[in-house]
Length: 548
Image (cartoon, rainbow, N blue to C red; front, top):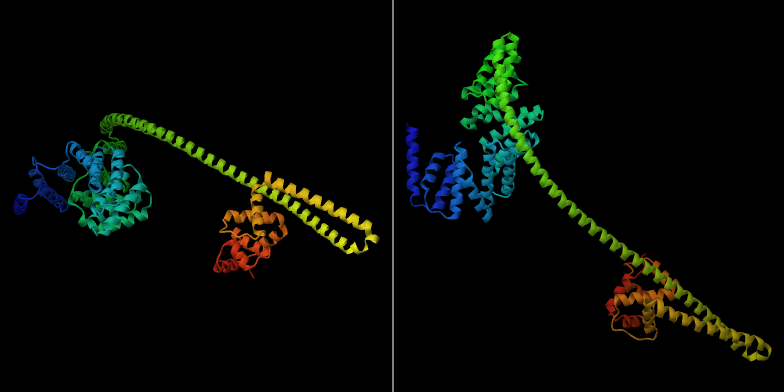
């Protein structure tokens, strides 16, 4: 009587306090009351808001709270029409926290209706939205819900994963009520995975937290503990199952006690508990229980009782077959929708793969074409270099021969009478050499003009330096053209310079400097030709210094 008076007084205080509050503030107050588990007071505030003019945001919040209270107090609304309005609004404004909460209750609705695939789908949507939300209560109930759903669907590994996630959240804020439930779920997941040592470890951790379990859940909580001990310690199993009965009857408790007593050889005691289970169980529980009773009655020779039970089994089977048919039709539709979706996805994926493969093939072919073209150009340029080198080498040899002939002529001029024939021969040789030089120069000119334009440009730059002209600046390309021409006409010198290991990488700029030095140019001339400062010259000298 006193408790009712206190609750009534509290409700009156809330009504008085709410009178002058804004709608949004009153809705926030309902949130607080729900967290404090003061559900009657929360209902009072919501009922007083009926018919009140609300903004779209307040209407969405009101719908979500009314849905939430309905599920918490086992009085769910007849449909999700209000919840769907809240979902649409929170999607529109991008409120992930409220949207995650709404999807959680959509999952809860599907779970009650035993549409577990849809329940898991909504639960995953809620999980994704709540990932970055700073609301541990929301994150816990989403993880706990997914653990429960995966347990129902025999997805034991996923049940364990989500139960552990829920436990981590509970331990983080030291909520012993949450820890109790999650220890219980984790132990069941390990038991289903045949990891009984781990199952026993977690069930032992759950027992001291029994006092924090809600009263309505205590029978099921103790029954779970008893069921886990059923195969390992029958005395402990009976202890917790009988404790569960002291908090409330349930068919599963009677059935498990019957199984234990039957295994112990106490068949009369088992029969008594089977009969008690049968008086309260649903159709799926009744099937297994009746089979056990039939086996016991056959053993006793009670044919009349067996006949009655067989008739009941047939009735149950017909009911189950109808349900299985309905479930099969639903599964076929789901499978069809899934296959259609997968087929469309595969078509899009194959199109994308073809496009990507086509692009990759084009890119490979382009790269291969560029590579081959570059190699052909390099090979052609090397051929031109070697041809020019051969011409230049022959010219140098002829010049040497010509000069040697002229020297001999000058030496023999004083003895023309004695060596007249020799002089004539040498003069003819000199003329022949000059003719050959002219011919080769024409060949060089033709090569440069018609087949090797790059070497022609390099020759122009080389002649520019030989003539003593200065340049404002040299581009990297011009330096490379000059270097390539020099390599063609002085291959031994170029190759010797290239093979020496230097302090820095031998770039075209550095090679240009080394060639100028090789040509005998002074530092002042090099600075003028390359248009660089004294500091720049020192840097070049340092970079091209041979390694010790």
